[in-house]
Image 1 (cartoon, rainbow, N blue to C red):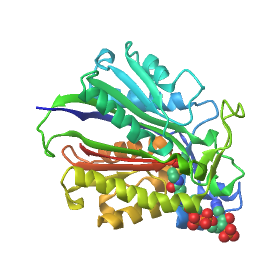
Image 2 (cartoon, rainbow, N blue to C red; image 1 turned 30 degrees about the horizontal axis):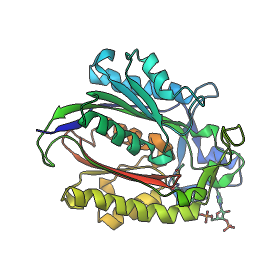
Image 3 (cartoon, helix red, strand yellow; image 1 turned 135 degrees about the vertical axis):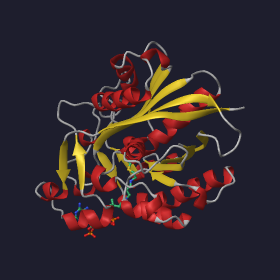
Image 4 (tube, rainbow, N blue to C red; image 1 turned 180 degrees about the horizontal axis):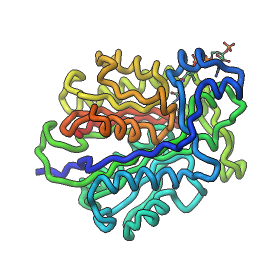
Length: 324
Ligand code: ACO
């Protein structure tokens, strides 16, 4: 029987501070009505000044770890998806590894912006299925508030902070869609579209992290089309139809993108996990946070078939079909 990467446990962490649309009305020329109508976001969490991405990642990782019942020595590796590392190096992953007292093994960060978690999950799955690791802690963590230009109303109302974590474990499973675990992953990038969403700085160019710059309308257009394509690819590869999917767990960028993707698939919105209204866009953290929230409140149950999908700067995009 083939090895499948199954979800052993999940965890999440959101910073204490909540920033509402009403708070933003006092900071930039915007309204609760505009933000709600264009994005679906009502509030978001913002990390404290002295809280780093690694702090968020460690909290989420610890939650997943405690829920797993495993010992630190049971974990073979840590992969963190982030665009906002504490330092240029070392990676956030090695800080998580040290904080959770996980012994020496693979640990590195993956950078694919909002698609980062799907990229990290696919990487972990490949390590597990080829037998190089048995259990990998995969985390999406972001302190996007540190690269947001708080004077730019076109972006500062969208982005937020948080972290989500999943421990994947290799287990033998049936060679069909009934088995628990990751069934397929699909990753893409098209660097010709890199100027639609970027930071206007970086270590080797300006020696600063820079701020997020986005051509929102253009990104929106590509998001709807790429997400629908990559989701359909996952369905086709596994010979299933959309009605067999229990939950769509999309990157939480914008409610209108979620609705458009669900509509293209013929899925009703009550099969879409939605957290963008109270999480905002937490980039690489959004999928594991959404998945953790829905698993913790009982919406997602063991055995449910999940379709994960994301799109972000690069442009990058991807999907994964996972039986929870
Ligand atoms: N408050 C009030 N008005 C605003 C605000 C604001 N916060 N921001 C922009 N506006 C104004 C604009 O100036 C513009 O005014 P004008 O018509 O007088 O020029 C008007 O609102 C419309 O602006 P658009 O940008 O065309 O608005 P749109 O309907 O496209 O919504 C949004 C903007 C929400 C950004 C949307 O385009 C979007 O969600 N895009 C995709 C974002 C995304 O998915 N990103 C991918 C992942 S993120 C990552 O990878 C890091």
